[in-house]
Amino acid sequence: MILDFIMATATVANDSINAVAKLDEAIAAVSGLTVAEVTNIVVTYALALGWKLIKVGFVWMVGRWLTRRLISIVKLLMEKRNTNLTVRTFLVSLIDVVALIILLVIIISILGIDTSSFIALFASAGVAIGMALSGTLQNFAGGVIILLFRPFKVGDFIEAQGQVGTVKEIQIFNTLIQTGDNKTILVPNGPLSTGIINNYSRESLRRVDFTFSISYGDDYEKAKEVLLELIAADKRILNSPVEPFIALKELGASSINIVVRVWAAQADYWDIYFDLNKAVYETFPKRGLNFPYQTFTVNVNNQ
Image (cartoon, rainbow, N blue to C red):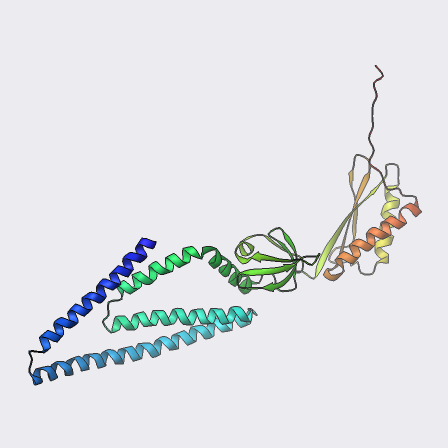
């Protein structure tokens, strides 16, 4: 890529030298002409230049009008999606600059100037810069995708790229996540936009899952009855979209494991989780239900 850039630069320099040589030849040719001939040539070139300038003016006005229309459409789409203001400004500026460069290349071509060398130079420079900033450009593209499609927003509690926390800010290249122990994690937008995202805040309701254990010999039906009483006493637990579910999950090595699933509002999830654990710990022993300890059976061979 560096070699292409050097060759393109050399081509532009060579074209400039050729242009100077042609100018010297033109001056030498004009010096031998009469005033009338010179006047005729000047008028001819002036008319041709005037026509080109008219075309340039028309192309410029149409090009800028199309650019403004495109920017208006992009702004409207971003406003509908509540895109971050920083991204709006950046994208509008980027579209305007790119459109202006394309328009200038077209105008140079209309004026009769060879643009192939300049285009080759710009293309080589663009490729070289793109390769040098590939990671940064990937993160920028990821940030735009996140802000346009909004898999999460500021304030959501998410799990992504091995990090769990609340989204504090969505920047152009990174997303700031604040963990439960008040650490700020900067996650690159590139991998974040293409990886798996678990958004806990997306839905208004959330299911709370528990597993409680009782000892062998304890009455499962009695444990189920106690759990239903505790659930009914907590008004934060909902009966929809599904009523509270209790079932014997498995017969473990030293315990009978009971699964409990209840639904609650997103904001009540952790309070219900901790409070029901505490209520079960305090109530089971009072109702004759025992928490098992892990046990081992050891066989001793006296021989």
